[in-house]
Amino acid sequence: MHISDGVLPTAVAVGCYGLSAALAVWSARRSRSRELPKLAVMTAAFFVASLVHVPFGPTSVHLIIPGLTGALLGPSAFLSIGLGLLLQCLLFQFGGLTALGANALMMGLPALACGWFFQAFKGVPPLRQSIVGGLAGALGTVLAALVLAGLLMTGGEDFAGVAKIALLAHVPVILIEALVSGFTVGFLARVKPELLKPAYLRGA
Amino acid sequence: MTRFPKGLRVGALALCLLSLPVCLPAQSPPETDSQAVVTLLKAQHSQLAGDLRRIQREIAALRADLDRPGLQEIFAGIGYILGLCGVAAFVAARRKE
Image: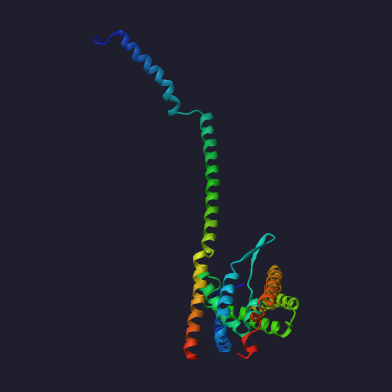
């Protein structure tokens, strides 16, 4: 799920760049230096996740994990996803450099939303955290598809049509993403629960 | 004429007569042979076309393989990420001092 060069009108692409830059600055100011190693590892995970192809029926799908990134990083997730997308764009030619702002919004906004969702509903028991983490993973992909439809609407596409196609195409991704995020969060909740508490909640 | 013995002349004539049927069909091939050649050419052509299609498929697959990011790019990306975060941590640590 990447927007390529030249799909969006120039004004929208520039606007997305501006909004992404503002969000990245906000995200960087909210990040704490003690969180940097976690940020680095999650950025690397996000960067590599799109290369993990899972065979599903006749095709294969790949993970995106905006939900998991958001759940673990909170507000820093936008910075992480922007950096991951920049490197994917430069090294793998995923998406285009002019559409980077739009792509960052498409993955970053769901990540922020998932981070908020996870922190608001995670509760204490590991099982509940795992389930909420899985829901956050699914939510991330659903929201990314909706943002994609919204962005393509500015290029003259029909919102409902694009949203339906994007959501249908990503049903397997949503399921796998929910499973992966749920298992990861459940594992972390049992093994290293402090990773799931963002720094801003610990008053650091 | 008198210098060559009779046996040699007869032998040369026999040789010419023997070689005649060998070179004649090549100069003017009969109808059935030309059809055989056409069918042979057609078979060769279809075989070559099949080989060409196979090679074209292989080139397309190779191009798709080349488009996929390799191990080198993946590790380069991870290295960039860790390096950039390291620089950020360094700057953050210096600012704190």
